[in-house]
Amino acid sequence: MSTDSVAAQPLVRSGELLRLATAGSVDDGKSTLIGRLLYDSKSIFTDQLESIEATSAARGDTQADLALLTDGLRAEREQGITIDVAYRYFATPRRKFIIADTPGHVQYTRNMVTGASTADLAIILIDARKGVLEQTRRHAFLSSLLGIPHLTICVNKMDLVDWSRERFDEICSEFVDFAAKLNVGDLTFIPLSALRGDNVVDKSAAMPWYEGRPLLSHLENVHIASDRNLIDARLPVQYVIRPQTADGADHRAYGGTVAGGVFARGDEIVVLPSGFTTTITDIWGPGGTRVDEAFASMAVSVELADEIDIVRGDMLARPNNRPYVARDIDAMVCWFADDAPLTEHSRYVLLTGTRATKAEVTGVNYRLDVNTLHRDTESKKLALNEIGRLTLRTQQPVMFDSYRRNRETGSFILIDEATNATVAAGMITAPVSHDSHIVWQTTKVSREHRPHHGATIWLTGLSGSGKSSLAIELERRFVAEGRPAYLMDGDNLRHGLNSDLGFGDDDRRENIRRTSEVAALFADSGAVAIVSLISPFAGERVRAREIHAERGLPFYEIFIDTPLDECERRDPKGLYARARRGEISQFTGIDSPYERPENADVVVTPTDGTPAEAADTVLRNLGL
Ligand SMILES: Nc1ncnc2c1ncn2[C@@H]1O[C@H](COP(=O)(O)OS(=O)(=O)O)[C@@H](OP(=O)(O)O)[C@H]1O
Ligand SMILES: Nc1ncnc2c1ncn2[C@@H]1O[C@H](COP(=O)(O)OP(=O)(O)O)[C@@H](O)[C@H]1O
Picture 1 (cartoon, helix red, strand yellow):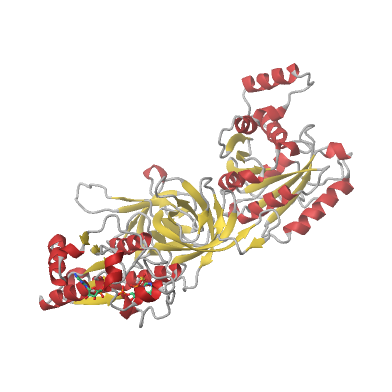
Picture 2 (cartoon, protein in one colour; picture 1 turned 180 degrees about the vertical axis):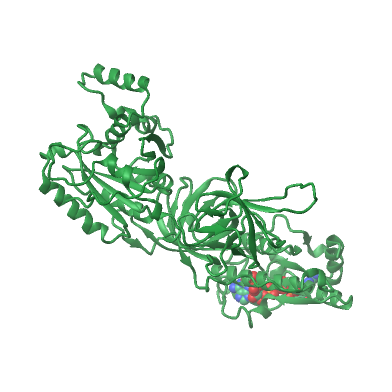
């Protein structure tokens, strides 16, 4: 069965580039197939050919073993060299090709995700004797997950099953039944023998029943232009150009690579996430030539009619066709790191397009078995090469589309801040919960218009350490000086804003997150937010600081370093005594951890005296 009928000659621009991903093991004849393509398209150097002919002859082979052309992956692997992807290049008069060749074994899933993520077409190899195997299904699933628009199933070694049409049809039917579960676009089956060249470049005389094209002709003619997203105009801003012009005018331009759709001079556009709108006055293409329109994958710079504060990581789009703008993301993620698994609440830098922001894994919904497609909802971790469905919360809003809609604006990577290593690749399925078209509402009142500049003073320490007493004194001082200030005490917040939260780790994290956001609003309004929370987790305190830093708001961490035994001695609410009797669980310092601050802005100890004296110390150190 072939689904590759010789239809009307589709439009293929001569020299157009086709990116291929090849999956399958060397046992399926992948190396021979790639070698055959390189050889028959005359894309190998004479010395390479002479070398493989000599090696083949030395082994007693009667003809050159073309697999030797591409066995670099295997040789490197045998030497224990870490291989990401082997790229092979070849061309015919009709088209240029890049082959991303990755090992087929499950332990190289991350390699396939890396190499195939930009592919237009995936070649999946099946040994005609063995039929559809677990690895075939894995390769098909990964190709579908990566949104590769065209799958070409090459049923190889047909010479070893006597060119049987029945065997070919049987394999095709089995694959189609499996592919029905996947989101596969264009599916083509080609029976071939890579070793003998049948249906690789030339039609096979041994299989007259096959009516489709040989592989190379199929690759030269597969239509990919319509795969490009020409609907959703997206330009992630890569850099801002401020040319020094003779007239001193500020002809600022914004450069980047169009990630989707079409931009034209005169188009109204919206800048995200700010939400400001303006009009494109000029577009400059490669080489500085003025162009009327810019299409997906074009590197351009655009000039705008209005002076708007635009920075790298912003995105230009059309006002009536915006990407999602959200902080909560639902995504499929492949874990690349081999030194530690991905876990819930772990934090990374998320890079999507040109925008980078901190992000936290807020949930591992399930781990997917790439062989069986079984969803394991118990496991809340992803180990090397594993794929799972996660939710993440970013610190700054990100602009994105679903990966299905646009592979450029629907994908991201996670970077380990400590090592700068890429630890995961993600494909966004959708925003989580919010209406994704929430765009930050700009206001007419800037901080400069407000009578006071706000800040957050964050007091952390054990229960009974003296946070509240100091916070109360600080608030009194500020208000007495005429500065708006407001006490945000953990106990008080737990009567209202955080009344739904307990003292488990996750609830404390949410307690601190919410309090951080509200304190930032107070500070943004010009008040001094004085937070008095145990806030036992260092990571949460760092995030509180980052939330303020991202908005240019001062944040001061004050550690009330009163030893546990002194807190227990004081025990003003009798809570320590009850915790010791086992009447209260998860009590900080007893059976719930407190992570001491490493670099608080000010540390207060009992030797600093009374709350009033401690307040003097704090205000003097902060210069407030
Ligand atoms: N299990 C347990 N662990 C810690 N604290 C407990 C607990 N149960 C009740 N309380 C009372 O709640 C106050 C701590 O609330 P916080 O919001 O400051 O804690 S946290 O930041 O969420 O860890 C804390 O107030 P302070 O003593 O003023 O710190 C306690 O009085
Ligand atoms: N600087 C201080 N020196 C001595 N005792 C203090 C000091 N600050 C507070 N206390 C006492 O310690 C107990 C706990 O104080 P509080 O401010 O409620 O702590 P927290 O808010 O951290 O639980 C109270 O009895 C309070 O009077």
